[in-house]
Length: 313
Image (spheres, helix red, strand yellow):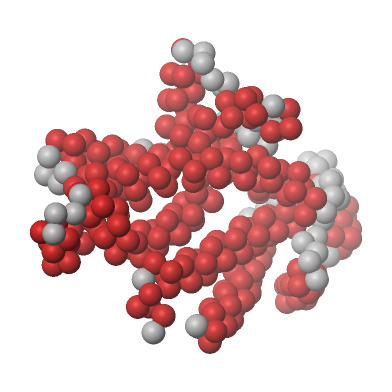
């Protein structure tokens, strides 16, 4: 186990270096000059060139990358080209909204999806199964922004029971904080729930056909115990895997959801930075999000040994 963990950590570091290089090159090779955007439409070529030199954008690409990578290794993600504020400070100011949205989505989506998948597998071929899987297919097929605007129209504008947009910090009241998270969490959680429910159903159907399940039922064990203790645990590895993979959808969906609901989170921060070609902010946000995703994948792999002890050997 120790050797396995060390290998996974080593591969994680390598992946992060490759992600850093890819993000750096994509930004530098994409159309647009941050110096020209920062200088304004009326700036002369000399002024833009001077600004590029001051920002270090005229250095060779290897020099720029190594300088940035060395700073990152020291915990410095750089400073915004526009506000001159540290990227870590900008992200920390937006972190509460994004974390609140992500945790609210996970708290509701994961249990709901597992219940849907287990129920659909237990009732396979019945009307319940068809309705649940129809919901899952629809949830996975509809774009997040379509669902978001539809919920805003129905529940916020027409019914008037929830806020249309915005975010209220938890320090200003739990009620307002929760009310502002309902619509975006449903929007973001719909895709996530649909993905996990479909995989849970497929895995449970395969597990329910195994001999040990028939033996457990022949012993007269309650069906709830058979489903939750025997079948679900043995089907746990694929389910945990898809939950980990779904985090990538969650990270990507946060950007769209925060834009639709005007939430001042990290997703909005990176969208605004892309529009202004603010390289340090874009690089910092993507690097941190990639690091979180890689770390979650590592924890997912390690959790397999808790779910299925046979993997330890």
